[in-house]
Amino acid sequence: MAFEDYQTKESVVVVYTGEGKGKTSGSVGLMARALGNRWNVAFIQFIKYWGVGEHAFIRDIMPLYGDQLYFFKGGKGFYDAGDISEANVTPDQHKAAALETYGQALQCATNGEYRLVICDEINNAVHDGLLPLSKLRELIDKRAPGTSLCLTGRNFPKSLESRADIVTNMTKVKHHFDDKFLANKGIDF
Image (cartoon, rainbow, N blue to C red):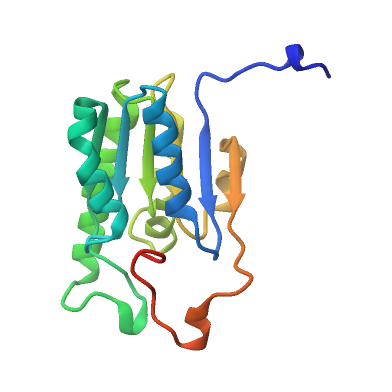
């Protein structure tokens, strides 16, 4: 098929999933590309409430972009993750935070104001039972015409792959965490 036979889509659903690193990093790169094309972007964070590099970066660039960039940091941290789970946060508090964050994501995806809505770690929230699968399906299906979605996190549901346009599975080949080394600031968070 010749290049001129290809078409463009008004919007797409991009998924970054898998056990390997790079899902959030990929979404930040996508945000940079969209902002560089003068799109309005919403970055909605579902899990990481603590200070991580991408949050500081987004906070620092927000004044440059004004109303073109919206950031919402929701979630209560790692859920059901053994020793690294957040202390003193109940499952009900995790679920309530996920639902509040979902409300922000749905509003941004359906109001037609944003060309790109990034839902970082939403796949984890669904997999961990903090959000029902139906909410993720609703987000995809009800997004405004012209609004693209980027959905990140491990364990994107196989049942929704047909609703996505681009699915990238980040595959871990090796990670120093497996050798009992902690995450490195600036590299891992």
